Length: 616
Image (spheres, rainbow, N blue to C red):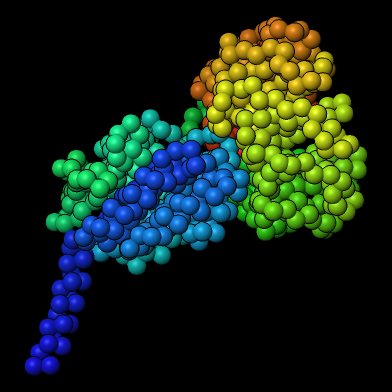
């Protein structure tokens, strides 16, 4: 009898395994937007309790935008709630977690081990990848190092025909945009991809990404409803069926399904690839050299003494020969480098998400000193004389001794993190933070001179990403609230403020200080007179660059001004007149703030890891 029971037990185990392979269910959460100011945490907590009460939920997928902003304790609160699930869960970040963040994705990787996932269930392999954009306002973007990982990973599949399910935050096809989706599709198109799951749109929607079924899942937020919700996905009989579950209430009838046969096939002709034909119109523009860091770059290049210095998100500071682009040395910090370095003859200062501010010998990359802070460092440092000025994610702004990194002074508290480049103007250091505030500190003492907080009242409208400029007793800023503002540099009072043109975060100033430039969110750039006490437009030009949200500043050299867009286009124009001089397309990803050079040259870095010297 005992032997019979043992046999029956093992038979039951075998049957259970077969059943799991032939039929399983998972819960799908997305866009939970946990914060102190929304119902995100409450709705997520209720959803987790609801999932735990259900039978036969084998695992949970969470497809990004875990937080409203990845700051403070928001991500930790979300993890605490998700960790109370009674089954495994797999998670990726979304754009809210990677753009509005005081740590980039360092905290995310600390809490969950990685910002991507892969696992097998039944016959299927689930692969989750995030698409940023990291710390920059741009389209979604697969980081070069993640695409390299994906190529290697897919080559290791024991069964190249194993059915794959990809989980991302953004959908792969319009109306939402992934700037390098074509590269991703080229990688996966020869594998058996049965469907793509994504969030971002906060609603359930069935679509197709170039021949592959693409399913968008709803947000767990209640929005204007009494309860939030999520999706339950059931697999059986070669079919995935999707049900919307109203948290704590009812599972609705199925709203879509994906069948495995016939197998979907990527339709290559539907993939729109970058168009570089604009370069034929301006043949005088040419590439002198190109360097590929093979990692995502959000920093602008710095140049000094015939050398180029630029960091990447893998924490590597690269030193290149300005003449030919050869790599001369590298220095590896403990985490990502996201901001432009400050280069001088005897010092190279930069910040790192490993919470350190570094100073290197620019000749050989030797570490001279590092200053440890309390949180990841993401801001642009400025060196003036013997002082380094830099903001932090730990709600402090610092003045450090360039010689040894010791503190001259610290200002706190700042109620948000700092990522921008501070402006040194007269006796003040001026910078914005992600707390809706522009700060002006006395440069010698670090005491508060004034603070400006007259923008539209929302964290996302903060004047935090633009590099403020100043001239003629005025400080000029643009912000995501679509306003351009002129502020009295002595008092912090608003002189004028206008949203006649829909600006965002891109601003610049002429070398002689007579003109401030601003880029609008579609096609247009304008110049205003810095000496007037009202908005006085010197010119308004349509450069036909399309819709653009890149926070790449406008830089001028020898009367020629330059800016880049989120889709790899560089525009050069005459500063006095606004006349278009040329355009050149480098790639299809974000152009960071450019570095104009002597001799009709400009240095460019792109989010996909390229550093390019152009001649015109």
